[in-house]
Length: 117
View 1 (spheres, helix red, strand yellow):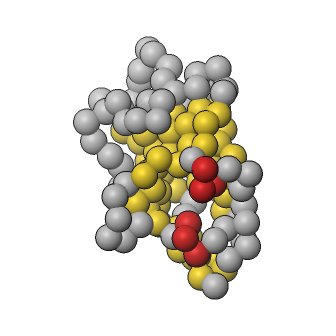
View 2 (view 1 turned 135 degrees about the horizontal axis):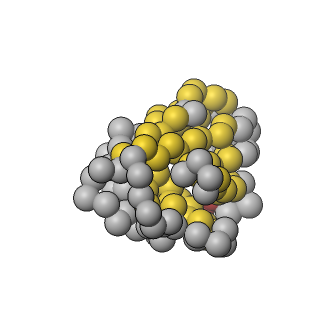
């Protein structure tokens, strides 16, 4: 069974940068697109970014130009470089296998990002 573990979150001030990592444990013979989602307190989980197997990225409008998604297929890992963070980026961030969706039945524990003004 494949599990995804997110890391790299933290508490920063507005304008700072963070780099989130997503490590995939377990073997899978199939490569998936990878995505990042986030959920702010009291709100629905929302899409942030996806990257295809071939490396094509897709971003939510709210993060375009500030966030960059990448992947390392040799390590089964995905990353989210977040620059120019805003207070509204505060959320629990999750990674998932799938293009703009989670193709698995579960979510990891996520990694908390808190941005203060």
